[in-house]
Structures are given as C-alpha cells and as structure tokens.
Length: 361
Image 1 (cartoon, rainbow, N blue to C red):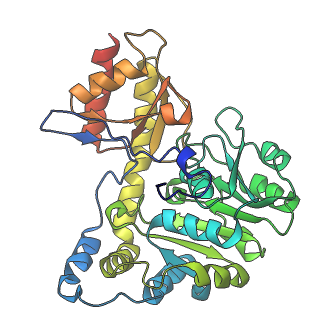
Image 2 (image 1 turned 60 degrees about the vertical axis):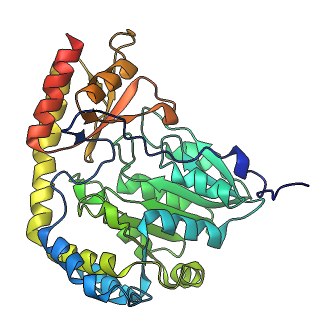
C-alpha cells in the first residue's frame, strides 16, 4: 500500500529554519532574528491586552480599521492596502495568485529565503539571480527573465546583506520588465533607511499596474510575535489578492496592537534614533577588532570572520553561544564565513563587542 504523495518538488524543499542557537546561560542576549532592540510600544502592549475579553469574537475580516490607519500614516489609498499574518502569508498569497506549475519566479542570491521556498511549495519554479558584491544586480535579474516568468521578488533593503538599491535602480528594473510580470518590493526594513536615494516603493506602485510593495510590523514596530504585515498595490492587483487571501487572516489582538503602534510616533522615533546611534558605533567597534562588515542601512550586520579554524565563524558562534549571545549562522545562504548580528540595546552591543574581543585575542 502506497502512502499519500506530495506534489512534485515538495520533498526536495529545504525548509526555512530560524536558527537562534543554543545556550545554557541564564542571561540570553538574542541577536539572531533582527527583532526590535527596544521591544514593542507600551501603547501597543496595552492595546493587545485590551483585547483579552473579546477573544471569542472573529476579527474584522478585511482589517479595514488597520488598513485605514496604515493609509493615513503613509498617505495611501486604504482600498489598496491588504493586511496579512506577517509578510510570509502575503508572499504566499501573491505566488498563489500569479504563479503555478510551469511558471518561473525570480529571486536574488541573498534574498529572503521564503521567496524560493514558497514558490517551490506551490509548484512554480524559483530562479535565482546572482548578486554582485552583496548587492542586488538589476541586470542579472533581467537576464533571468523568460516568457515563463510571472513574478520578480526583490528585498530592498536586503536581508542578510543590509544593502539597498536606489530608487533609480528600481525604476530601471521596472521599466525593463514586461508588463505581465509582477514586481514585488519587500521593504521590511524601510523605516530604518535614511539614504536620500532610497524609496520603499510607494511612488513606483502609484505609477504602475504591476508592482506590489510589502511591509511589516516586525522590525521598527517590534511586533514580530504577532505576525503582522501589509502590502500595497494597484487596484487591479489588490482585487486579485483579496480573492485569494483568507477571510480572517489577521487576528484581533494583532490588529489592535498594530493600530496603536502606528499612532505611537514618539516610540517610533526612539527606536529609529537608537538604531541610528548603534549602527555606526557597532561598525566602528567591529572594524577595530579587525572584522569585515558589509555596509548596512538596516538593523543588522553581516560580519566576516577569519579562515583560521580557531577564529572562524563556527568557532565564534560556539564561543558566543557559551556566553549566552545568540546570533544567526549563514550556512543556509552559502556564507559559511559570516555571522549576522542584530542591533540590540546599548548594553547588549557593548557586551557583544567585549565578548568578540576576548574571542579574537
């Protein structure tokens, strides 16, 4: 008797693994997941708690009140905002809507792993475009376009590299893509970027019929545990996505906390200021230790370690884990010489630097 068989390609999938390391230390400094260094807004926490007595109620099906708050914050058309159970769900909805067996979906070499995983799990074929010097290469993406291409995913800023593409580069990509291909701009880290030539993608969405911008509440707003994301696109694309998404896909507490987090501008500025202070401080500290970092515009660092087995990335990871410091290994991205560090509190980052100094001596 044969067992049920999955669709072709499922058994060859390499699942997304959120590796956070292991430690026996009582005090843990978790810098492995690019989470908000300061925790969530106190107002968001209170809004979350206030929903406790209403858990028997279904949430607002279309997250209309939250979509209104998002639109007000960013000057958008709320009818073209869709909220989701994290960006992961929205990525799945997009692939479900536009790609299937025989279709191709382009992602970049160091792009978010859920792009190819979701594509393959739904029967389409993921196609990788190489990056150049840890930056998305627009020409390399265009070289991968075929008549079977349905979607192009581009994370901007990119994770785990921390690099970004300018608005002119994104416009150039869009202008050269066929109109029947959906360009998805994942701007999960947009709130941290202060570069004058950067755009999260709103302006491109407004002038196009085939562009979707993804955003998240997991980073600056520090609501990763509630799984809350949103996207913005043309009325044509949003109508299609609404036909595919689940009817109650964002839970009651997440909607309430998201609205409160959007309204707490003082906390947002505090979190942004902390990142703007700690990124250059940490880059300078790593450089003084002789560690090479990829330039970053986000809230994390991709750090290269020596090839010496006693001082390489694996040894550094084990040493830090033994001290209660959890960071992200990069073997799943074929970067065995690198580790990724999130920005933590000022105290945490000083402990990290001191620990690395001890390890490298």
